[in-house]
Image (cartoon, rainbow, N blue to C red):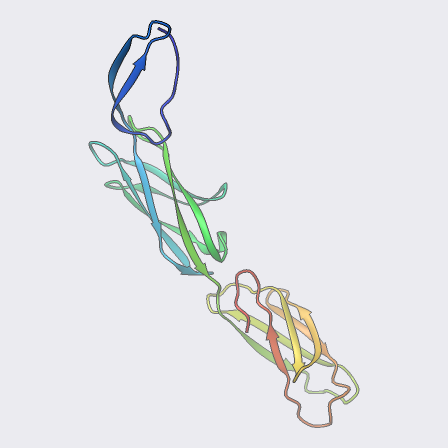
Length: 212
């Protein structure tokens, strides 16, 4: 009898192969032990800009697996570590994976007579809170645009991107796009009376940062 086949991915432990010869129809069973590791993982929730920790557990018949494990977001490696007693805690920079619920792949390189294996987990990364600092040109003149500089910072030290809009009530006075977290907007104050005017600054947020 000749032939070839493969076991489903991830199958380990004591198995019994049920074999039928062709064309004779002779039937037999073959005991088989397949060595391999099972990889499971969990990840701590985090805020964008802070680190998250991926907790990896590798199990296999006999001694606890040893060897290297890597964490990937898509095809990009975002962390790595070494198993100790079948476990590893791997730090991942959330700036590498972005805000939202992300799926991570944990790959075990294999060691000794254990082949490579992998598992998956998901991590929830919240958007970072933001705040704005506003500086107004003190030499503003009625009928001329007023330079308003807005610096937007995040609570975790990351750099927000996106749009800032200046408003007086429901009236938009100007808008601009952040560069390195800052923008100077020439606000149209031509319809404002002489004296103090309250201006609202609205940061629209981006994929990783909350509005403010």
